[in-house]
Amino acid sequence: MIINAHTHKIDSSADVNCVSFFHSDAIADKTSTRLVSCGIHPWHINTANIDLGLQLLDTYCSDKKIDAIGECGLDKFIKNTDIQVAVFVKQIELSEKYELPLIIHSVKMHHLILEYRVKFKAKQPWVLHGYNGSYQMAKQLVAKGVYLSFGASLLNNSAKLEETIKNIDQNYMLFETDDSDLLVSDVYKKAQSLLNLPPDLLEDQISKNFSRVFGK
Image (tube, rainbow, N blue to C red; front, side, top):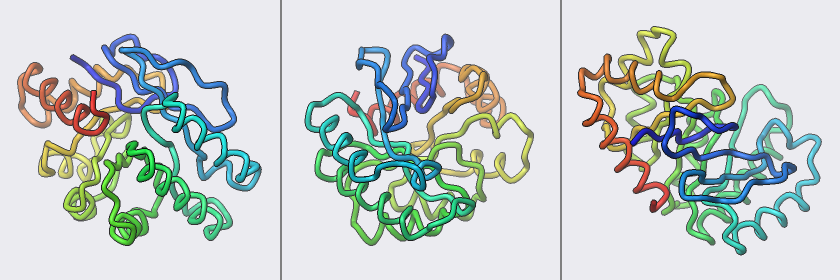
């Protein structure tokens, strides 16, 4: 089974897609092959009606319309870090309240993501999507139970990212396409090459990881 753990569109190469919607979108219905996530993205914190967005998310959670919260998180290049943190914290609280995983957007803020994981003693799975950081940071995140989702960057032949994926605990690894036109099957193929794993073994590992995060 091939799984796309984070995408903004249906990927035809995946047996299961976790499709992410922004809080202002009309979200699709969940199905057995389409999981749904929704969150307030840090890109939108300066334009969104935050209170209304959080109320909407709370309703989606209570009505069981979504399988995960996110993407949400922190972005160094967006102004108003204090507001970003406040909105991120609210979504951590919703994740814990409704026992839903959190899908996280982080740009040069991995250290703060780790800090809040520890500070809130979060019990729900967190998935840091589009990971392209160092192995040193990856080790710290995984040690605190944060899953790392790899996407288009893996195909760029980055020595740093190749070191990361070759050495991290494979129990905390997922694959995605985000908003690219890439097929997640291509990410699987690249990972198979780097890890020297047969396709069936890698697919089985990722399926088990996905099941632990989403309970599916």
